[in-house]
Length: 129
Image (cartoon, one colour):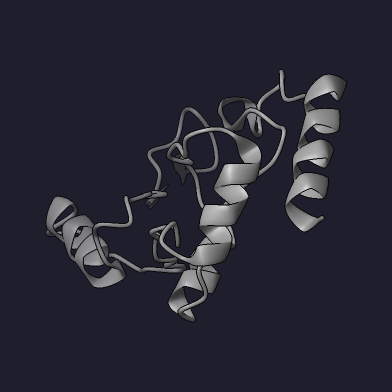
């Protein structure tokens, strides 16, 4: 969220602009998400400048099942938007996979342990072989 307005601390601003990044789960479509935001901000001028749908992963696709078997792990939710959404909108099953910790993404502590990179490369090789 971002709030901006005014030109100085001792002046009553002529406007206040609130930017909201509403992220929603893939069980809610884009229209329902926009409607929710409009309801929350009813009575205020609202401009939607970007709207990206969530995406249910294509876990049922045979290639996804093979990839999951190669990882030897259970799938977990990925919080945050990725290009998987674009693939899902086109009917192409896709998964997020990588060595990073999504909870550290875009933070000061964001990093990837080299061992996890090596493990991810091994999984990809196993899957592709």
